[in-house]
Picture 1: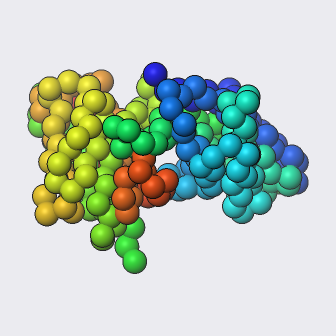
Picture 2 (picture 1 turned 90 degrees about the horizontal axis):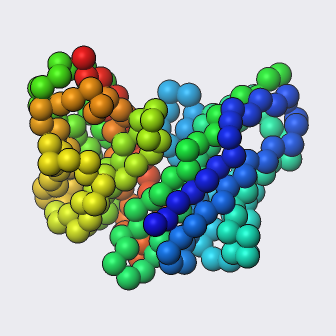
Length: 115
Length: 117
């Protein structure tokens, strides 16, 4: 079946540090890939997405590149802020056929950024 | 415009009681998904609606769980004879058309936190 594996957390960084959260996947078809973010006390929000190999999704300074050869979609940000403290979820959706696009999520990575 | 709305935001009930959780999707969104977020299992898919039909119920954990959608809009997730392992945050998401057919992203509500005593 489909699955997503994220790096173990929690991750603690100082403000302006570089962030990488690793995400790898296995999928029976050709998936679309997503990063969702959950800020404290809020619901899940789409952060970025990529729908085919070598696509780069980007938003709010975050980037992730769809790497089919390594089945990865690592999240990066060059300089984190305290306001980036949240839980980050990598997810996939397999397209076409009888799939209806249900999301398969990784376990989530808690990011805490200190001033 | 309004986002996905879920009610109640919190629900505490005794083991064995039935509960109903409500989801109001974004207006015009035809696809609706229910997920469950729990400490032990992470985020899991429960059921998918296209219009009022549920072509994918594969994630419902037992026959105590059921869901319906009416008017292509509001959906209700019902849990009968609740058990302590049902304690979780239940999330609803909607998309304009099914994510699998169009790569349309899913928009999530804030969830209902269900606690079974």
